[in-house]
Image (cartoon, rainbow, N blue to C red; front, side, top):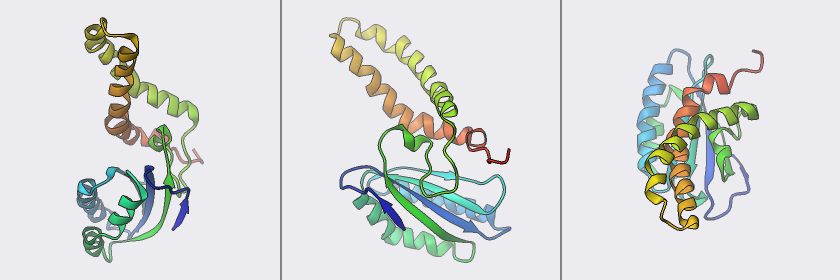
Length: 188
């Protein structure tokens, strides 16, 4: 496991790579739902996303944690060990990488995998598709109710609503929905 720039108190993203035995993909996908629910309940977890290949038998789990210590607790936990025992003979964890991250690159970047980040124009377009409807909604519902507030307070409302909703709700779903377009194989 390679580690880059892990610092206490900073968010960390881990990518785990799984090799699934041919013909066992459905069983593995069912298992991913269970371990994902378990991980999401674990203290410090900030999200789990799975990248399923169009072809082949490698799957990637992108896990986001509040800090390296919480991630380590999860990796060493009895709950995780129990879930790993359930997948014996179906899949093998073949690699992982931890990386400290901050900002929007975690919406698209997949450290430690052979999957290349999408071109910047695709990231911009995808972010626009996520941000524009939310911006419109904020302007329609929130902005009219804050017109009498001081400018600094009014300006703070927009990012306080927009950024968490984009980071935790919209972008993970949108990048999953558009994954075939975003992560098109290089030979196409």
